[in-house]
Image (cartoon, rainbow, N blue to C red):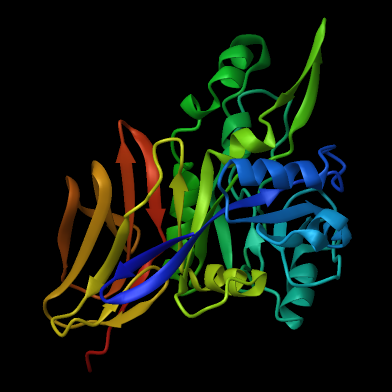
Length: 354
């Protein structure tokens, strides 16, 4: 956890690894106790577990006894065809392998608004199937994965051609989120859905065998050092699992590619002439002389997105953009052609009268 000040407001920032699979998933055999130790070695503040079709991780002794690492034990559900994967937390009910509108509505009735997993995927070989999001009605979702590391990695994999370098240097092959996911994210926000964007590991720690030895593909600790979601809590808010979940639902978070660097003193926000400010997931009323400020640990390419369109860019460590019209604004920050930081939107409300 780090404390940050944005426009005279103090936040505690927690660094989390999302979409983690454990021994309770059919496609993972790694013990939860081992995963917790890996998270601590990687300096993670919280993890969000999403085992397929079950919440068994909640009752694991390693979870019940853990005092330092914050753990949100959820599940990953899907429809009968294996598509429309949905990450849910804060419930004990498994609504899975039924039509997608049904399980989204069932969870919404409980007050559970989940996150859409790997909505758009690519594959370069038919050996690995895609698990896309196909449902059009997403009004019950809180957010979506704009960047899923494992999905992106598999999308580049051709086992007979590039398996060895991809296993040795996975970060070199996962450079940015899929443009299709960013476009979908912007589309849903333009439709007024207030869709939070998250970055996830989707880590399974799959074991593979080759003649003479065994090894794990993309181990938990390795992926925990890659893609994370940073969550902001007001300094007087207790960092409970439910408070972190609620902050994510509101969009008080951003995505960071840790392989480029830790976002130690990064912040961004929009401020008005009176000093009132808003940061990720928050609102501010439109008026003259609004300014978006950013501060980074090192000089980077900073692109300003307004209502899904690039409108300006800077290459600097700190800077500002004039905000001249209502809408939603977010930043895409990169270094050496690799995506680094993706902020959630700040919403500039149009209060002008017709």
